[in-house]
Amino acid sequence: MATEVKRLIKVRVEKGATFKRDGFGKKRQLSDSWRKPRGQHNKQREQKKAKGALPKPGYGSPIAVRGMHPSGFFEMLVTSEKDLEGLNPKTHAVRIGGTVGTRKRVVLQDKAVAVGLKVLNAKVIKVAVKAEKPAESKGADKPKVAEKTSVKSKISAALAPKKEKAATTAAEKKSAAAPAKKSEKAPEKKAEKAKPAASETPAKKPAKKSTEPVAEVKEAKPKADSTSKPKSKKKSESEVKKNE
Image 1 (cartoon, rainbow, N blue to C red):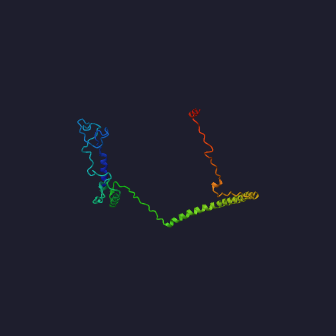
Image 2 (image 1 turned 90 degrees about the vertical axis):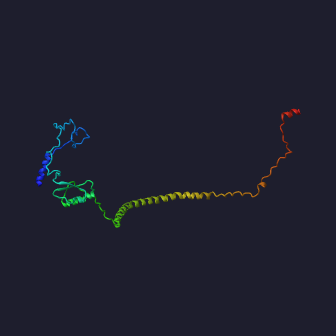
């Protein structure tokens, strides 16, 4: 029977015709889906040459293979686990609906394969598995810190002799410069001390402030008597004329 089904499918393919609506290539909005021509002067309806065939008896596929999938199975749409019940794996194939989610699809595919049904639209679903990181204990972190400290200690140990040499050279320079400065400053201080000794002069004592009142010290100036010296008044021109 399987060989007969294959032969009938091959006949169907060879015999099959594609019926396209008239004018689908002339206008962009027209699809190639079949529509019966109804125009009074339509060339396809009148069956003119090269205008396309009309669907007629004789173009149909063999009854045994009619509606069959090219794989040789009758297609069944499945959206739940109940739809898998009562299907024959020898004659039926399964197509999972597009509305089914990935989680449910995985279950349906596994169940169909377990029963022996062929899945026409099977998909390889990659399940994202989170890689669990190994739990790092507190003790595991300590060696890292120790490594860092050891590196720092190595660097400091390498730089220590250079710092010590620089410190010793700086100390030697300071010690060599210190006595020279002291010898230069010492005679200057002695000379400064000797100067006051050579020219010893009695310091002038500040004059004591007199406790006497200011009125006694300052002599009172005699005031001029008003009788002794009469004040001269300027005579006006009118008075001078009168006296004359």
